[in-house]
Each structure stands twice: as structure tokens, then as C-alpha cells.
Image 1 (cartoon, rainbow, N blue to C red):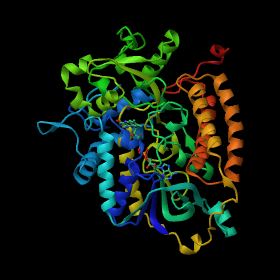
Image 2 (cartoon, protein in one colour; image 1 turned 180 degrees about the vertical axis):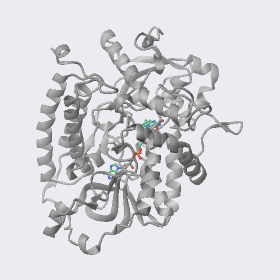
Image 3 (cartoon, helix red, strand yellow; image 1 turned 180 degrees about the horizontal axis):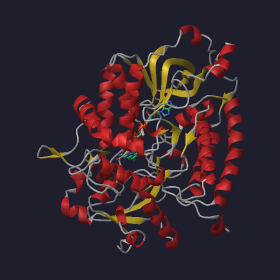
Length: 523
Ligand SMILES: Cc1cc2nc3c(=O)[nH]c(=O)nc-3n(C[C@H](O)[C@H](O)[C@H](O)COP(=O)(O)OP(=O)(O)OC[C@H]3O[C@@H](n4cnc5c(N)ncnc54)[C@H](O)[C@@H]3O)c2cc1C
């Protein structure tokens, strides 16, 4: 199979790119490891997407992005994204794909989230991601230039210098020609070749014990890129969302969107006191890292299990069931009536600000390899992401990447790819699921405890040691056993966890969502 473009991932970035390219006549193969195309972080996005609010300007958006992300924000990228935002949302998402955003009297309604200076976020009730994802899927399925393969998990990137049987390739510049992918239902590995390969594999939330992300967010694309020799940056910057539903005896962390606070909800303690204002003048709407740390600090000091979100002011403005139907439904299922009671919440890992170093058009340091969306790092988020900018980043990256790939005339010859051998599966056993799940739980616990909201050099040193031990165990385990989805994910999780842990230890300066105590405090 040789395509113009192989897209790995069916979230906002992968689907948008596939659609742009297919419309320009390219042959596109889009794969996802899940049975359902919609299973992605995109589907779960609630709050909305940054657009251009009334009395807004790209400069003001950039100012807010920098306020949240600090000096590490790539200003050039931020400016380009802010100035392209409304065009891509309007012309592509709304007009072409048919995404509907909430309106009142025929006009878009804009909401506000933490650290935004004005309301500028377009949303569809509290299920913006679902609305975008399902509409994109509908369009992609209808396009005959896109071959969609579900239950198809990319294992490793194929590159000329490492995989080709032609020794001359070893001395050429490294190029990526596609992937080895595991067909989960048929239990066999295939090769998919493409002139350009695009990683759109999303984030890493699932490597933390508590996360808002689905269990598919295991950092696969990032791990594959690392194994191929790509640069991966800013990985210490993991954003922890302050408000996820606290359910005792459960690891499930359903997000209570920041837009609930944007509409007036306040974080309070069990006595109803809005304690965040003691930590930051913006109170409940301070940047996410500050609110998460404030809650963490408060819980550590008080030994309480959770804090609360008080929706009294939201109720004064809205019918909560209509404005936040998904959140209302989820809470009622758990016997929490958010119209009349405060919601118990705690922070959880939410968004990966780092990733594969990429330009805004997805170009990485390796020829024919691109990375877009949450798995990529353009520097837009710096040390901390401004709320609702990630759907936008995925969308704009897909648009820019499509512009580049449409112009590209760099053919890949059948002769060269014929030198790539088939995948050789070891004669091993079926991996013991108890060992796989045990290792996964170990990684998730270690990452949450030692690389979580508040880090210290001592914790990170311990983490590095423990992860190295686990890494060696997992690599051997992987080589000795037959492939399975969870085994491949485990290998990717440990790879990504190690990079995060070592980059976090190397960066002794707290900034944005990387908060590290000093050696002195650590004693
Ligand atoms: C609960 C929640 C709420 C959020 N709310 C907002 C919000 O309101 N606004 C906002 O801007 N952002 C929000 N975000 C963040 C945003 O949703 C994500 O950053 C964005 O959707 C990422 O899109 P993506 O296309 O990069 O990746 P994803 O949407 O995560 O898609 C990744 C795809 O890659 C596939 N994949 C992964 N590994 C492999 C593999 N090995 N082989 C094949 N396929 C693979 C997955 O199956 C999936 O299809 C939220 C995130 C969460 C979890």
C-alpha cells in the first residue's frame, strides 16, 4: 500500500488534515487503533474553541496566550495561529464541515475561561468536541479519497536508514516511509507506505493515575518518534486540570469544564469559602496551574479528599440542564444534583504542552515525517496552555500541513520501498495480562506521585531510577511476547514517561505547569 499521505489518528487534527488533502485529490490512508473513529481526546472536549470574540483581536489573544504560557511561548506561532483562527473555523469547520456552535438570536455566543481577558470561545453546549468530531467523521467517511482503517495500531515508523535492506540507504538522510501497523482483529502486522507520514496521535494523559483523557492517550506517536530519532521538547509541562469530578473509590475523572467557572461557578472548601482567592487575585479563574496547585496545597494541608464547585451564580444566569447537559447528566448518574449541591472536584492530568518538535505546518526534523495536534510541540503553549487553544492548534496545524503537503512533489519510488522487509514476530507467548496491567498501573502511580502537580528533585530522581528499571523489564517483555494492543501501549507509555521524568528533573526552574521545589526545600 503506497499512499500520498498516511495520517495516524482520527481526532480533530488527523481528520481535518485528511479532509483537506483528499479534497485536493491526494490519496490518504487514515488509521486509528480504536474500533470507533471517535475515540480520541477531541471527542471529550467540552469547553470550546478559541475564536475571535466581540471587541477581540489576534494581538489580544496572543497577549493572553503569553500570560498563561510565559516566556517559553513561541510568539511567532502564537501570532500566526491567532490570526488564522477565525478564517479556519469559519471556512472549514462551520461552512465546509457543518459544525454548529451555540447561538442566540442568530449570533454566536462566546464564553470565557480561565486567564482569557474577554469572552471569545465558541462552544456547543458542553459537548463541543463531540460535535466537531462526529461532523468531521461524517465528512471523512463520505470522501472516496480517504481510506479509513480502524483497529489498526501503528507500532513503529518505517525509516530508510534503519529498515531498508539496501545498504546504501543507511548512508542517506533519514526519511520516514510509513509504518508497521498491527491489525488488532486479524492479529497480523502490515506495512503502510506513504510519501508523507503524519502523526496525529494525541496526548499522554493516561500515563498518569488520574486523568481526564481516555485510555487511548498513551503517547504512541511520541514514543514512535523518539525511537526514530526525533527531537521531543517541553515534556515536563503537563497541564493538570483543577476540576474533575471526585468519586471516592474510583479512578474515573470526568471533566467539569472550565467554562462552568467562566459562567460564574466558584471553587470553595467544604464550608463554602472561596479559598483560591487567598492564592491568586483572579480566584477560581486564575490560570489552571495556579488553581490546581492551590487545590493540591489546600488538600495537603487540610487532609480533605476534595474541594467543591459551587454553581449558585451559574444558576442565576442559566438553566443548568440546558447549558451544561452532559455534565448535569454525568453527575446525576453519580447521584450528584449540581443544580442544588456543590460538586466535589479534584485536579487530574489533562493536557500535554510538550511533544514532538514541529513547525506550525507539522514539519519535524525528519524528512517526510510530520506531527500535528497534541502530540506535536510548536511552542504555542509555552510552559502552560491557555484554555481552549488546543482544538484550535490542531485545526490550524492541519490546515498549514495540508498547504505544505499539497504543494509537495517529492515522490517515493516503489523500488525503494520494496527493500523494506516484512515484520518478524517473535515466536513468543501471549503476554501475561496481569503483568501488562501491573506494569501499566505502576507507571501511572509513579507518574502521578512523583511527576504530578508538585515535583521535587528527590521525587524525580527516584522516578528516573524506578522507570529505568521498569523500562528494561518492559523492553525484554515486549521482545519475548506476541503483540497485543496493551503491550504496545505499555512500551510506549514507559518510553514517554522516561522522557518526561528526565526532562522534568533537568529543569530546576518552576514555570507554568512544571512546578518543582528546590533541593533545599527537598531536604
Ligand atoms: C476531557 C477533555 C476536555 C477537553 N476540552 C477542551 C476544550 O474545551 N478545548 C480545547 O481546545 N481542548 C480541549 N481539550 C484538549 C483537546 O481535546 C485535545 O488537545 C485535542 O482534541 C487533541 O486532538 P488530536 O487530534 O491531536 O488528538 P486526539 O483527538 O486525541 O486523537 C488522537 C488519535 O490518535 C489515535 N492513535 C493514537 N495512537 C495510535 C496508534 N498507535 N495507532 C493508530 N492510532 C493511534 C487515537 O486512536 C485517536 O484517534 C480537552 C481534552 C480532554 C481530554
